[in-house]
Image 1 (cartoon, one colour):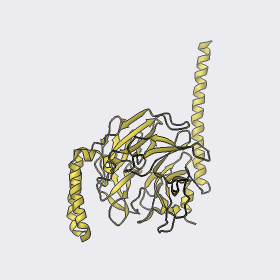
Image 2 (cartoon, rainbow, N blue to C red):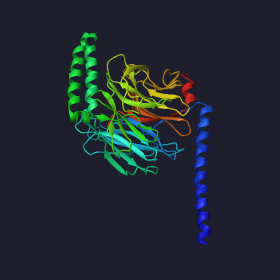
Image 3 (spheres, rainbow, N blue to C red):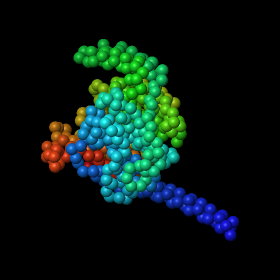
Image 4 (cartoon, rainbow, N blue to C red):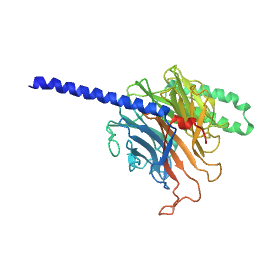
Length: 430
């Protein structure tokens, strides 16, 4: 009897498995089709009520079961506050409200800051973040955690918790030296009031590049890591100590890491990566340098190992994080503060020519410039399986009339989630 029944059970199980896959694919296709032809929409809400605590630098992912997860850092400050930890919240598929907050990482006595998440091809959740060892950004130590059990209530159960050892190779110092020589040659053409600062920067950067400890510490995450061909993981990193960027690369899912050649410019930090149709990797980076304020850009034609010279794009940036992603229809979506000064305007732009032009733009948030303008910044963006877009970002008010809590402290800060589609962006400002 067992010999008869067993094949039937196996066959039925295979049928159920295949049927589940087909239904999932059908739902994804129908959802994306509905999004592509449907009516434009925007829905948004705070993930938790405004409070006086500092809540900043969020990142959003969609889990395989359709839930949303958002992480951010929370505490009484940033790098100088030793109570800062990484928090998270979950929005169940089709739910209207977010779950209570939970802790994702907390190193007692140290600030845990700029966190990023992604889900790898094995359907595992990764959390990456820096712990600040001595209350200065250049003392950041990169860490990461991996979980295969994260789709139920509450925080993930972590299977792996490791330090990411960022080890720039011999080419690092050489690349920095070359970039500093080029900058030194341009100092005389700079405005006179900036020449001393530039000379000091060149001298300090050379010393730091030659210091083994300094060049191995201080690297931090910001935007989503990038998975290349389901085989290579590229974690975009930056250093406030150097004020430029670098990619941490692993081809064995974190067992070993190597560093790309540095992307050395004038204040190009917090890179976000997208891939062109010809395989070229393209990154946009926050402008942490002198005016004019523009997102910096660079390209890699060898899967992230080396990068072209950093140049200014045409996109304004006030010195704030941005993220760019490729959509399944070939368009690119960029979320950023679309100003040269202030974080009072947060916009989403769409390009249909791989970033050559950005034909459509619409603001998620806007306050007129002024002392009471809010800051809506450090955004994160994804495309869900149904084709719609989700973003999370820091929502910081500066108005005098905000509510106060029981301690008399103003409730100014939270993390906000926005759900919308391309049609909403393309409809433009009303």
